[in-house]
Image 1 (cartoon, rainbow, N blue to C red):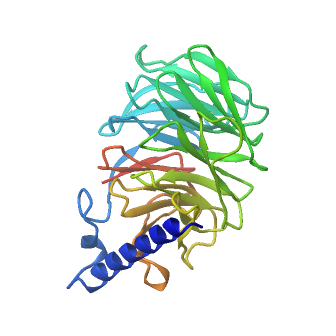
Image 2 (image 1 turned 60 degrees about the horizontal axis):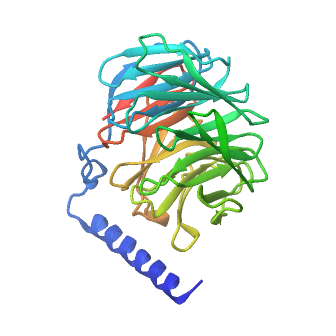
Length: 342
């Protein structure tokens, strides 16, 4: 580690400690009032979205924060208005769908994929029943995650340990990213530069890639003891959050290529399935197999970590996401339900 990197790490540690002390010493501070977020309170369940007949495996918000796409074991993808109810639905072409994604600029396309190894692209402006406009074939195992880079390209990850960047208009792969030694379970795009992305894998590592640079990843993050199921960028793009089957979440700093905080609880005895940050980055949300969403104040450390849970689902929480506007959290579960929290 260079002297400059060490100085940056020390400065970051001092800033975290300063904020922790401020929260700790604030007179009369409680969890409900400690977070200066939209709403400034612990999220409460506001809406229940019912319509799937099987376990929900994935969800993703539209770029404008109005709609949500979800994918289920019932073989359907559904687009919801987060304020009201179901808008569109369509067949997912696989009886076991594992991922879905919303295009973020124009919000006119969604994608999904699963056990048949294919990624399907749908347009959302062709009526209430969606039909696939494109089919991307190239993986040798199940599709675990997908995210649109822009209106013309999409990233997919797979159980074949490979990530692929696709040209949607040509239905062709542009580049393959190969370095993981286990199933690649999740991908997240840098909010400041979508050509940078991070992947999480069953090899217990997360890797940072640049889609403009073929070859090996820019960084490899280690520290987890089991599969990494989910990755998410901090809002400023300088750190990455991970959730693992080792029942912990970690934050890795891209500036020093190392873990700077670990989040765990004695109450958690199962794997973390999904992670995301609040818009300010102050809160880390983690879906879990214990039917709960666990929440941490990222500025708290060690024995002083502030931790609480959101309850209401009756089965494993398989996916969650914070809206791009930061106004709501959506959770999806094997109980076939989506819940919107504000």
